[in-house]
Amino acid sequence: QVQLVESGGGLVQAGGSLRLSCAASRSLFSIYAMGWYRQVPGKQRELVAAFTSSSITRYTDSVRGRFTISRDNAKNTVYLQMNSLKPDDTAVYYCNAQLVVAAGVQNYWGQGTQVTVSS
Image 1 (cartoon, rainbow, N blue to C red):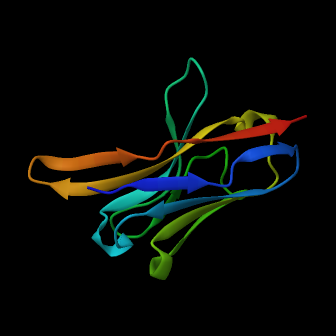
Image 2 (cartoon, rainbow, N blue to C red):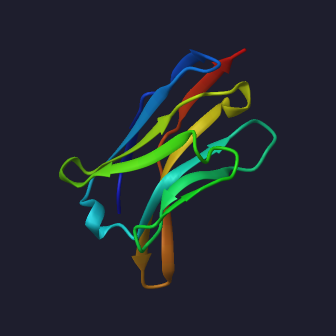
């Protein structure tokens, strides 16, 4: 199992920046994949950015060039630097970790942090 604790959300004006943090309860090297998702009411949760099992970074098209995912292995923490924020980025952001289990891959989620971008 892994526990994920997110921080860093808040209210920001369009064009501003925020950095989200996700602290994991175990070494990042023991986690198969890790990333950030977001969700707005009435819509499905969507991938924002992630490290794949090969440590390759992935971004959804709408944030590429504005958001950067990074990791600090010593702190067991993954970050999401969000620049040039737009009102469409408003959502609850969730940290996700995937662990390999006998049946395949198990997903774990943080509690979510609200990001609100005002126009």
